Image 1: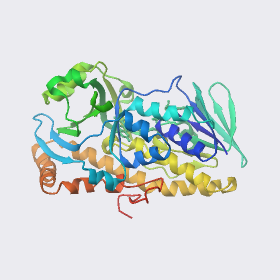
Image 2: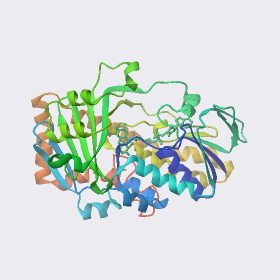
Image 3: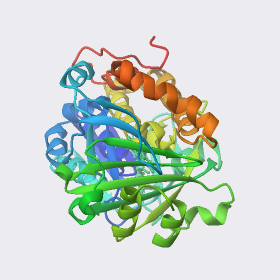
Image 4: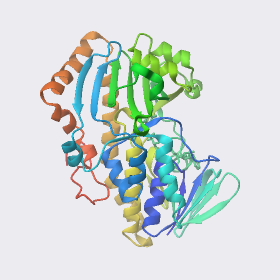
Length: 408
Ligand SMILES: Cc1cc2nc3c(=O)[nH]c(=O)nc-3n(C[C@H](O)[C@H](O)[C@H](O)COP(=O)(O)OP(=O)(O)OC[C@H]3O[C@@H](n4cnc5c(N)ncnc54)[C@H](O)[C@@H]3O)c2cc1C
């Protein structure tokens, strides 16, 4: 089939590789003049890495990654440990792949290198998709410069403000959560004694939390700091912020946090959005994936992982039938994905509440049991991630995980 994909982000690139591997011709249209990504970190969990392996980018990703040895939670101001749980080799074996940290541009570069070497993928930069019209036989994809491309299937991988979704379901703003996320990356050597631990570490405090981890074999350190920003209005959503504002947001926090903010050269602040699950993801020959249909809060670090799984499963379902079976393929794709992504959306929201305990009493009630569980049953904390991490969209490892949080 002739597949047009709108958006060459993590989801669009993954889908392009999956479709081309299964013998389809792909045109990937990206509105930006260059494909790169913000200098921030991303956690790639085992469920996503299994897909990247199946697409032949796992090795490139591993070369660029950092592998943390533990999950940790600490109090933001004092740095006191709530729990530390080792990510053992046994856990990694059970999940079926490693848990990695990457610099986002490194992940994009690994996907892009593979896509550029695939004869069946044509990448067009600076080409913004504005809409589509379709008949039962084909779909015509319209671009901002007047170009029209005929295809058998249009995949909207065009992110949270998707033009493809807008045409399908009308213009609806995603919900602003009242939170903004600071994101910065800093060379680890510049931090001296205040380098963050070589773990995935969540620092918790009243109305805010931070996550620190290492990238690029440890050479870079990443900081994501989430702060309540309920006074923000539509106009402030694109306000990128300054170092002074980041320091003010985390004033009095542990020197690791303050030093990371001080030493970073660039400070970005992002408004965080959420959206209720959509009733459908396709209309005729147009279909959505990733943030275009399920923007996910970052509190389970699964937004990109879900886009990666989506792209692979969509290509599998489409390829399992001939063109006449396209409506069934798109229904099967939705049915295989909706329970899992909805559970991730709910789990992310619940984690946001857990991390942002306001007063001492609710902090004690939340972090106290976590502290005890970390000491007495560290395996139980890792076990909670099994439904997410064991899942294998490729089926190559026998799909030991479950598609949703109920364990079904
Ligand atoms: C603070 C923060 C931390 C996060 N951390 C993690 C993490 O650790 N792990 C994880 O798995 N996820 C994480 N996420 C989520 C993750 O970043 C997103 O879910 C993921 O990038 C979505 O990928 P996507 O391809 O669907 O969309 P996007 O990455 O938004 O890509 C969309 C692409 O489409 C292009 N585009 C837009 N409109 C058009 C158009 N009309 N025509 C053509 N091209 C278009 C854009 O330029 C872009 O390249 C985090 C998110 C945030 C905010």
